[in-house]
Length: 457
Image (cartoon, rainbow, N blue to C red; front, side, top):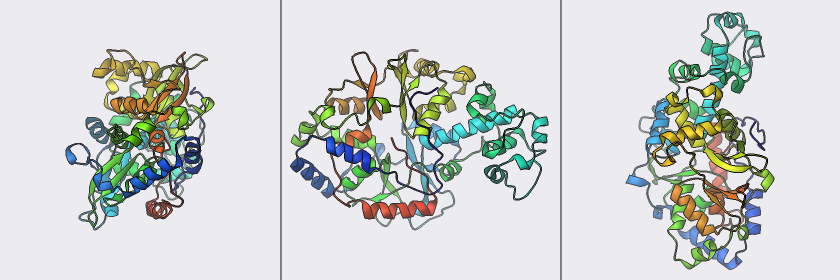
């Protein structure tokens, strides 16, 4: 089983920005920076407009229509080497505002939630034979399952396809003989049939990005305008845990730019030679309150765990990646990110042994197919020592376009992790009440759309 991961309940239907003060306040209290420098930097970022931030590559934000299938959306994200994209409302016509034009943002976090839930649905559907399906009464179906079937009153499930029965079961079916109730266990028995159901049969095959956006809004759509300050952007991407911020033109419902944590850290890297950056980047991680998590809080998975369990661990803990370890001392042997789900979806032919696929086998398979992965070898994850400088961490992360670097000791035991969010937090602090009005307005907009919780990594 995945090690040291905390079980989390499914997010509420209503929007909520997580409580961010504990993390950010701790980082701020541990930073050994002169107060005058912090105040000067914060004031400077507050004066820089978002319009000064470099445009996305090729100057065009990749957008995905809401009626695009999930698999096609994954292909688009993969082909453009991006982790998220705005989703266009296919029925919007010519809306007067951004809210009408866009449904939200699709990212790998939402996709992995869909995959995991539908892995369970597919598993139950396949494990429930037609005789079993015919014998399952509506009394055994929970409220969510009833809604999934479109039923409004007592009715028999007999005659429904196995996939439809699976949807009902996953929605709240009380355990019945012959019907698997644990998606991971059931999926372990499926092999190639998993893909035949999940990728080739209805209702899964025609699932659209729009339906995922409406069900798993874990990447809130919180647009800003070109005249917004960069301080607001940096706070949203650090303290307030957003991974991306869409930028719209004033009075136009068009996304002009798409600022990500990766883009900001790359921008910071370009500040080499400036006194303030050189001073901060020369400091060791410990002088900046990093790594933030203690040794016991680092979430890991073992190399022998099933890959589906690793993705479930990321989903449960709302994180974008996990270190893969071996042995009692948690020696680091690899890393799996939420983005790697694309390999399962786009190359199912590589994973015919899905029912027995471990994390290590998954990483080796990727290594045999990705050009820069080392011909069948597991690509070493980014690491640094506890006394590494912030500048060296920024250089490493920017060179590999990754969201995290693992802090290891001399025995390669994982003792911490530094994320893009952590790096950004080192350069700013929030003046009292600075984002209160902005976030209150953003939360009102999200509540109107019924958004879920924010990804916390």
